[in-house]
Length: 574
Image (cartoon, rainbow, N blue to C red):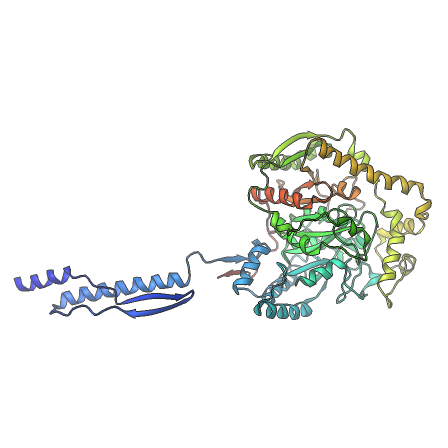
């Protein structure tokens, strides 16, 4: 008995090495080697069992350690409906996602929420089969080591007033149904060259004239955050589609707020760049003076990526020559860094705030945003005033009714042969347009020749006056940007026509050509989105992107609409 105890105590004192150790040869590759055999000695059954148990535990720990190295605890997870281009590109680079998969996910969301479910009616034309073929080709490029840009293999929604050689461009008019232009618009061409995939054409207020999101071809687009309220316009389809994550990025156009208003109303980011930074060639026009295209995206970063890709001199739009020597050498997204608000001087333009009780809840969101920016290091100058009644100055300053006929006829002539109409007069004769446009078309068709129109000349001069006034204000107060609400009151009910005065939102940028960006600022008690806007001096586009990004980081207000929840396959862990 005593001898047996001594044997057990001796066995308990022995130290054994793990049976197997794992040596990492290269990332993701491991080899095993046996440790030296321990010395043999006589063992009792009990000591042998204890030793075997210790060996099994050691082996299990070694295996678990190796597995932890093979699949780190900090594995990445992509949730498509919560992501930006940055996260999607990380998954594409890691091989956890392909562009073909991404296009299929986008098409699935369009099928689930545009063609079924809430039927948002944001899409007019679906480019599914071609988009999938392009995605496969772009996946092959990526596999070979070629990545064109941060938009390589990324689906993009395009408003249906941008020319696309592979889909009709109708402006939402029945008269142009199935009419395909010969060439892409310049901005669309730049996107394709960067590897973007045009996945669908989106609905709009017909001919981009309105703020309700309705057309004779596409019908009424719905707001995914509030189906009974307008989705904003005229870029309603892109606004609703990006909000519902049919794609992370899209294109809108505006003449009087039509990028920024639907961005605001759908809780996404919308930007119009300085006049001359982006080409208008191949965009169905309203006004040669006020028209601008711009990105509508889920984040400021995505907006900056779009701007980097699309900016450039276009020989078919001489206004782009204004940007020569005035754009940064670095990509716009490179300016988006932590601490972006520190030291930025922001002027709160109180001229564009309203004082009624119905405005209080909307303004409270702006006041909260200003507080957050101050806490993040921004220098707030409040109030800033132009010393004039800006609302009165802006009233009726649009020149689109005067310019539409000449602009539209010139555009149609450039579309090439075999088009269903060649002039505004031809379009009117078809009768295939929304009844709301009958009076506006008649006014435009009967407009006096621009060179002889004194009223038009006066409004055109006011454009330069407004631009000087705002830039002088920024110089006077040494400001990096002016800040104000996009909307100051409730969204009208869907179908409201005409919209009440001031219901369309803030359009000051369109009447002066200065850059402006709208970023979500939160929701009212009833769940209506509202945004904050930053306006900068000419060609300060990088600066206002930086400021908008800084604000977005302090107060991320992006939310997926409840009626368009995630679908199977949209969460990827790698």
